[in-house]
Image (tube, helix red, strand yellow):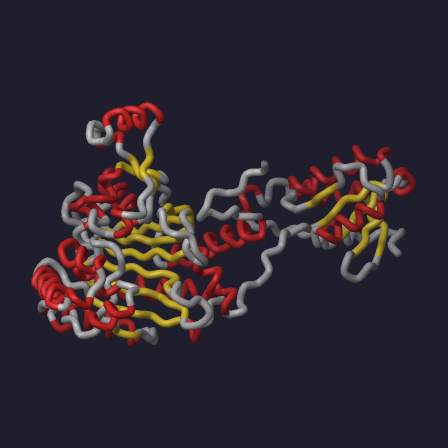
Length: 464
């Protein structure tokens, strides 16, 4: 029987793969304007990178993380009944998010030397969480994220929030369809007392709260604000708010971030219940949501400040902040807004053969065109000329270059514009000379000044 993709995963077929590539290219260009450079970290890390960084009490680590074992280590753990006998370096997990791995890389390679400028990095790739699959929530999903290590000022927070919203606008998500939530999570000076007050509030209302929130009261009480149980949500509306319990430094920082956003014309909603799902956040947190068409999966990106994360993975104290946005969620947001354009394959031209006698000459012309940076296709299945034209139309070729024995004996080719259906004869040798002038111009995706019309609109005495 034919196999299907694993549950909770989706094949990225050509149209979506092209959109993913254009999305990452857009991100790279936009983020570069803010000084961000690319980084690529392994898809799996030592499990401790996530347990220490994200927090063992979080749902991400406690319920959703995929562990990775080599065949031999899997057998050892199976025989022992646990993996406690394995060394730390043998306990690996697929990355459920990108921040912890990037911070580990920054610490390992000392990318933020004492007194140096902040390390500003961005990444794009797959993440993995063992969640119940549903629309907008996959077990393998794709994120684009940025991390800034070494910056302490509120300007860095505001810059990052602005960059996130500018990205969505650039991708075509209508601003009126989005809302930006912000909050402050406090820091070590004020959050412990606040966590205790929330814990006590949950215990005082335990008869009204679900079993999961009872557990959270002892492990991570702030996560109760995220409970999807309607009764719990209603009870937590009366819980103490972090914004009423901030220390002076955190309050000053938060007010400065808001003032900078106001000055930049970025509208936002203060949400004192916004806590995000990971333990490493301190002070500023933010989340971009879509207001229509996505139901409960309305969050499409977010992040915040994590001034203690570098220390948790073995580094020296290094302030940091970042965000991540979900590609699949963004696609759903674009679809909901009717703003998801078609991602079509770019084909400049199609070389058609009247018969097999001209196939070698057609192949030679195709190679010359590709070396010049043009996207040109030809038939590899021995199809009739009529079928080749149908194929050229199917791949949206702008022109079809027809090679036949009679034209080829004169050194000519017949060109048809597939939009206007106008035809003409052009000199093949002249076209190939022009192509040779641009050979290698678009290697690696660089833009070339040549186009299909430049080559095959050559003036000659035989045009029709």
